[in-house]
Length: 379
Ligand SMILES: CC(C)(COP(=O)(O)OP(=O)(O)OC[C@H]1O[C@@H](n2cnc3c(N)ncnc32)[C@H](O)[C@@H]1OP(=O)(O)O)[C@@H](O)C(=O)NCCC(=O)NCCS
Image (spheres, rainbow, N blue to C red):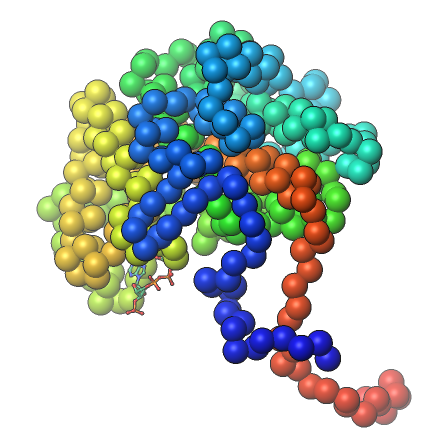
């Protein structure tokens, strides 16, 4: 049996460093988050999703010319081939957003060349096309599920504005576009989270970019990773009013219930993304003259800090943003995936560029050297 330091083994790999990366710095003890060495606060204040995606993929901030070119490239690649739309139309209405997106990505991967034959530039190119197509797959899921005609993407709109347009058929107001963009920027990347690590494992076998994106989607689908925003909104619906917050939280905590959107495995202080998104949530609620959801969240935050010294995570105020944007709550994981696709591609490329098969050991705790029993004698 190979030698292994069992004493250092941690369940769920908690606290385990699993590789080098230059994509994202995350220090949960002080609430520090940087993409490619730039503080999330500076990026959120100054960049749109296209600029962030360029930064993540190329490792540097784009010039004006680079950004224009890159944004045009993304805009030109949004549409899904007819056969993919036809495939999506044929799916049962009971499938959820991530299941449908995964099927669309699988259909897109038709005839993908063996990844070993592709150059890094070709891999990057596939990644950019996928990032461009994620919002279309998500919006078409929504339109088809609700018996609506899919809306062709509009090239002149930015990534966030075009997604909102493909959902509703209307060009959104500036507040809404900025809020959507901010949500994408803040969800774009987060180091070796479960879905990103799974993407890297997929790539480490020299599988292809499409398979890696489907791995990312599959892992994000689990409720411990993506999709806490819908849980927050469901809870807000149950609470009903600001006056009922204290009572609800007291009861929930007494019954050992988890409060959705609160707490984080890595952050032991305020999640910097939640701090930024709180401001966005306040602004969009003010612009829509609808402060009820924001005020309830604000009160829950205050109560949870007092009772448990726990802080909101990024999904907490996302729920308010989606509600104010009129986005259906069951699409929260799909929206997360639209944003995180850029981080997934950045990590896939980093893994390709310095690959070693990711293959950990397990700590075997089952029986050993049992006496074999022939089938006729088994009870
Ligand atoms: C994210 C999460 C899974 C992290 O779990 P974790 O790392 O095991 O949490 P911690 O170890 O920090 O928990 C410390 C204590 O706070 C409690 N706690 C953590 N999150 C809580 C929450 N949301 N509501 C109530 N209590 C919570 C734990 O039960 C534990 O209490 P105990 O010491 O009495 O046992 C957890 O906070 C959670 O389930 N949050 C709600 C779901 C959510 O928002 N998910 C999206 C994450 S981005």
